[in-house]
Image (cartoon, rainbow, N blue to C red; front, side):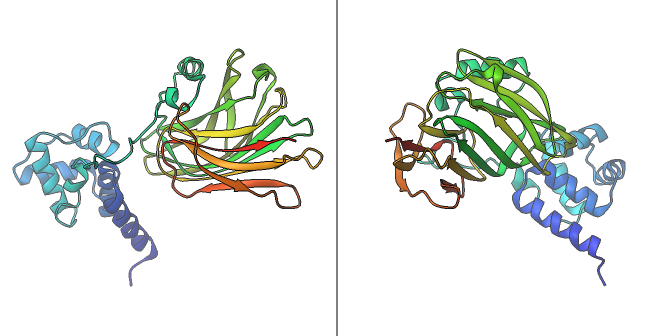
Length: 312
């Protein structure tokens, strides 16, 4: 009988070999076979290939990729040593061809928001790179519009996956409505995180906040966190938009309105960039005990999605 732990390890290995990336597949294979790096190095040497333990360690961490002919030969031998199908690892090193008609893999902040320069300066203060090492698996966002038609606040339940080792934080960006006071906007950690450094730009109405995890993630690991921004400092709100620099993951946006201040019309929309015409417009109907509307993006593309509304 195969033990459950062995079955789980093989299932995890099959998944890693199927989806990559290379370093995660290699590390998972080493774990599944129970081989230490010095033993792997010795077996490679017996087959006439010299690779240092440090290089093997870098490969499995994603710090370096095998590129030289001798390194690629070592990868092919690793497939034998680790009892993997032929090409299981080497195919993960091949560049993925992108059709000419396919959309770009990412959008810059400047393409997604008017106040991008201010956000970039705030992120630089936090020493946060454009790619924070995380991508979204699922993001459920609740936006609350108050009795004065103001953006009262928003709450997020967010599942992320690390695509490199050592990630221990997520940086959230809040873009308030005209007239908002970022200095008075509150940041709350509601689940599996705590608030770190917070920076804002009063003129741009933008605030960025570090949300610190309780652990350091390894590549491929997922993490669920919850956080909220308490606003209510701006003027009348007429839309809520969310920009996505990278593709992937599911996004659900719900906008709820105070029962004493309901809009006369709601619609969803999408944009390739902040300056592009709006497309994908669709009327939304207020429904529920707490009047609201929502949209669902099953597979996010780089760009902008949002919900707008008209007041009487």
